[in-house]
Picture 1 (cartoon, rainbow, N blue to C red):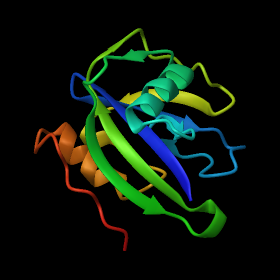
Picture 2: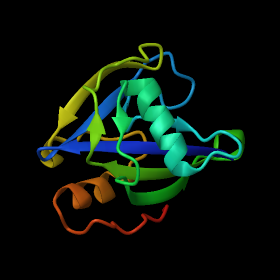
Picture 3: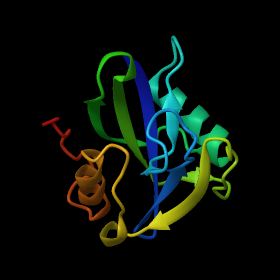
Picture 4: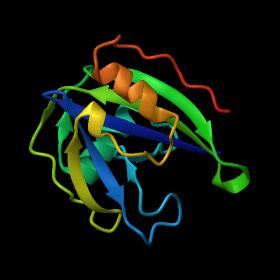
Length: 142
């Protein structure tokens, strides 16, 4: 099972989503939260900081990310365990510094949120963005 960490950069009521390139093996041509694989012996917060720097060129403020949800998806070799985090503080201007992975980045309000690569993450993200609680309950797969 692949261990993945993603980050929801939230500012002024909007969240930054990436658009996965159509040539990606897993989940091509869909909107998603930026993030990636957790390396061996790496903590989730450390992986989150590294991935957001590699993909968006930002430095998240240490200890400010809030856990959003955890879910599992896929089967066999393609199965993933995803840990998503809300990030409200960072340094730098987000940019697509991983064009081989994403062909677009864009800010969305909760009511504009497109379907995400992992549809169960959407409701938890919208709930958190609307201030229904800093810790959204973990979604359960169908």
